Image (cartoon, rainbow, N blue to C red; front, side, top):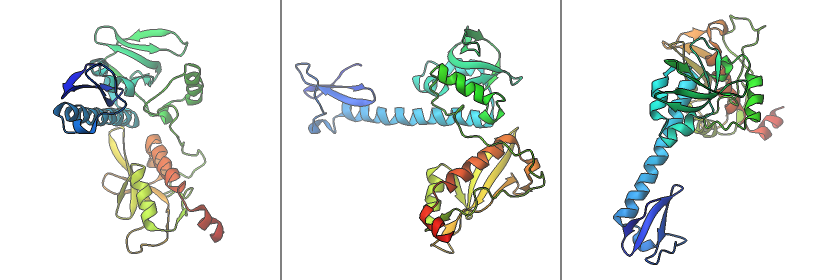
Length: 284
C-alpha cells in the first residue's frame, strides 16, 4: 500500500477502498470531505472502479469459456495468471485435456513449467499441454464425486463450475419433443416483474421471450421461454421452454446438446422460482 500526497494528507488504496492518514501518520476513519475533489483521491477512486469492472469482466470471460467448454491455450492462462483478477477467476476450476479426461483443479500457471494442478489423488502435479478445457459441469461424468472431493479440498470457485445447477435430458423423453413444460405456468401478478427478473438474472428479453443463447460445438442454440409482451401490462406467466437454432428454426429435444439443454432448463427454473406463490395457491 503506497501513500500519495493529497493536500495536507496522504491517501492510498487498502482492500479496494481509499484510505487517508494525516501529517502525523495517524490513519483516519474516513477521507475528509474537503479531499473529495483532490486529484489523488479522484484518481484512486477511478482506479477502484476500473479494477471492479476488470474483475467482473474476467469472471464473465472465464464463465463464457466454461459454458462453451472452449479450448484455452495454456500459454494464455500462464500469461494472465499474474493478474490477481484473472487468477481469482481461474483458480480451483476443473480442467481437462483435449480428450475430455479430468486433469485436476487449477492452482497455478507458469510460462515455463505449465499448469500446476491438484489431481484426483490429491497430489500436486504439473502439466504442459498446448490446450486445456474448462468444461461445463454437465459434461463431467463424475460430477458428484468431483463435488465431494472439492469439499474435502476446501475448493472455492469464483466461477461456479462444480456447483452450478445442471439438468440432463431424461432418457425416456421422446426425442421428437418440441417443448418442455416443467416450469411453465409460473404466475406473476405483473408483467414487469417477470421481465425484470429475466434481466436481473442476466438473460435477454426479446419479442416477449426470455432468451438464453448457448454456443455448443461451434453452433449457436437459443433456449426460449414466453414471458409475455406489452399488449398486457398485468398478469402473466412463464411459458413452455423451447430451443431454436441460429436461424430461428425450432429444434426437437433430440437435436439439443447437453449444454444447451442444461442451460435452458436452468433459465426456466430460475424464472419459475420467482413466481407469485400466493397467486398460484389461489388459482389452485
